Each structure stands twice: as structure tokens, then as C-alpha cells.
Amino acid sequence: MKTKISLVRAGYAFVAMIIVASCNKDLSSSGTAATPSSTIAVATSVSGTTTGAIDSVYLMQPCKRGDHRDSVAQSSLPSSITTYISANYSGSVFSKAFLIKNSASVIIGYVIVIYYNDKPVGLLFDASGNFSKVLEQREKGDLDGPGFHHGGCFDDRDGEQRDTIALASLPSAITSYLASNFPSDTLVKAFKNRDSSIIVLSKNNGLFATVFTSTGTFVKRDQLPTEHGTVQSIDLAALPSVAANYLSQTYPNYVFKKAFSFSENGTLKGYLVLIDANNTKYAVEFDAAGNFIRSKTIH
Image (cartoon, rainbow, N blue to C red; front, side, top):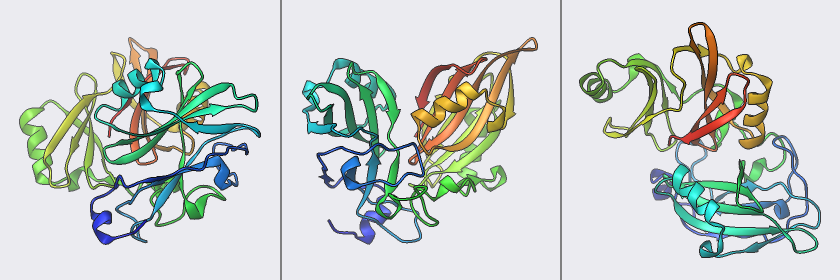
């Protein structure tokens, strides 16, 4: 595979995929040494890093000794998997799929690789085709250790929030568009993605994520899953442990972006958490006890 400046400018490039077909090492969600046999390498090129383009990122697939992967055609996947991907990653491009089998060759799960907004996403499903988790991605040099390095394509995992844009610094094209089309919106926060697109969070009888290109051209507006009532910004530490554990297990090495609580007549109704998992942003809703309700893929 070649690494060229043109690929850097294009963001993620769908080129090819290297398959490592054995699977014999358990991995925790982060900070665990990995071996090539427990990963799937996906060819990609990432913009916005200090080191330029890279040849691939690695999907960290947890597995037990004796498990192995076999390629499977998209047409042979359980309908629940294709339905889930269509509902949560609209417009995505299918890349590869694998059966996960145990030492007795019994199917115990599926790994699906797609490209969403030109970004690779690895999804793990159980044997029945039910969604389990979004697989963590790492660069090759970070297979051992915490899973990121300064200047790498996942360096936002250090929690420094360098992708945050001050609301006063938003391009005038964006503020003008929002003022003209959604004059009742109260802007909350803005982020710049690796592909230079911009997401603006706002409140207006609910929460919304509006996506723009780097030049301020409107792309889409999503209403985020929320309860009715009073919206209040909260810290990650304010989430119930049930919700925090769900995020850690379902989105390994995710980056916390923003969280909100919802109350009605003084009674807590639920929470919404915005996270970044491998440069794709998700809004995840929980009830008042911290139990998962639903999630929405933003960009």
C-alpha cells in the first residue's frame, strides 16, 4: 500500500484490506498489549495528524484462545445485522464480514467492517446478529499500550478536547445559516472533525446536532434522542455507574465530548452523552437509572 499526500487531503480512503484470519488472544478495552492475530488491519489514510498519512488502522477484536475468523459474504449475514447497519449507519459502504467460531467451529459472533462517511467502523455482533460493541481502532505503533500517541489519528483520547471550536470562532457562514433557519436555537458547543467538517450542538425544545462542511455549507441536522423537560449540562462523573460501564464496554477507548441530564417537574428523566469513538461521533441515551435506551450515529 502507498501513502500519498493526496490521500491525506481526501481524509479516509477506501483502498484495500489485510485479513489476519486467526484469533487467539484476549484483549481488554484499553491499555492491553495486542498481537496481529487478535486484530484486523483496515487500509485507511487519515487527515489532521502531525505525521501525515498512514497505511492502516487495526480493529481490536477481543477473542479467546481457539477462536478463529472465517470470511462471510454480506448476503449471508443475519437480517438483523443488515437492518442494524442500515438504521444506524445510513449511506455506509460494506467492506468485509467475518464469522467468529470457537474451537468446535460453532458460530459465536460476527465482525463487520464498513466505511461510514469514508471512515472505517468495526462492529461486533453476537451469534444471533444482535449488536454487541463498536470495535476500538489503533494505529500499528499503538497496539501495545494505551492505544494512542500525540499527533496520531486518535490523539484526542488524551482528553484535551483539541477538536473543540469556540462558538465565537465559528465561520460566519455557519452562524448566519443557523440564525436564518433556526433562530430559536441556543448554541451549546461545536467540534471540528478529522475531515474538517463541523458539528454544532444546540438546544431548541430538545437537542440537535447540525453538521456543516469546513466552509460552512449545511450537510444535515439530527435531533438527538432526549426526554422532554429541563436540559442541563453535566460532567461525565455525574453519570450513573451503569451508564458509564455501558459506554466503556460498548465503545472501548471512547472520548467523552458532552453530557446532559433531563428533568421534568424536578424529577430526573434521563441522560444523553455525546462521545467520539474512533473519529465517529455518537449520541447515547440512558434512563434515569443509567440503563441504555438507544444511540444515534451523528457523523
